[in-house]
Length: 231
Image (cartoon, rainbow, N blue to C red; front, top):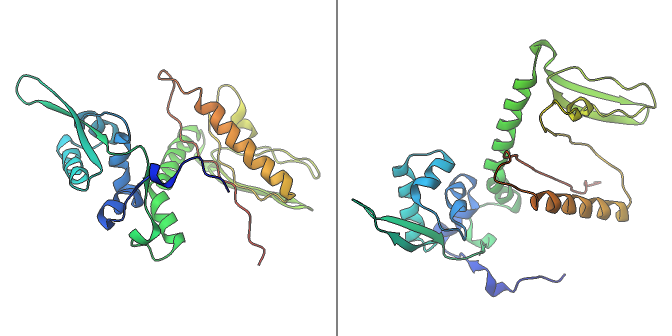
């Protein structure tokens, strides 16, 4: 497999304390805004939702670990304002530098904060859509071919007739509904179709990433595809 970047282009973090900043999802959220962008403590504090003093504590920690550097100092009446940026465009945390007991444990710890954020935003969005809370719950359906859908919805969807394929998420596609999608399913695909789906998901992500605009609304996007074990 070819790699676009040489190992030397990634700053290696062998110090367990520095490695923990990027391996721990909670701590990483305070460092990510500085990655190759010049930022002030106060603006990052507002972005992540903490006090300036709490953010300053983190910044001092990152400076001590060699992850941040002061890029310039802005003179102002009273106290000068410092601007900070990460010391590298990219970081590599070797598994051996973490305190994870397994690769799965590292994966879960690294993504835990993101997973909680996705669940929190979905919960808020579903709650806003629930006109009648009596219909807020899990909807599971299938036919002779097996399970088709298992989703959490704030309203009763149209149940497909035998042999008919209807997405339970279809009502959310109307123009008046918010842009929400949360669907997990199992597909039996040939190796070539699975690779095509993988590439389609990648291209879809890149296409809309190129359309990001400052006047838009932030959305959390998580696309996942993984082969199921057969044992």
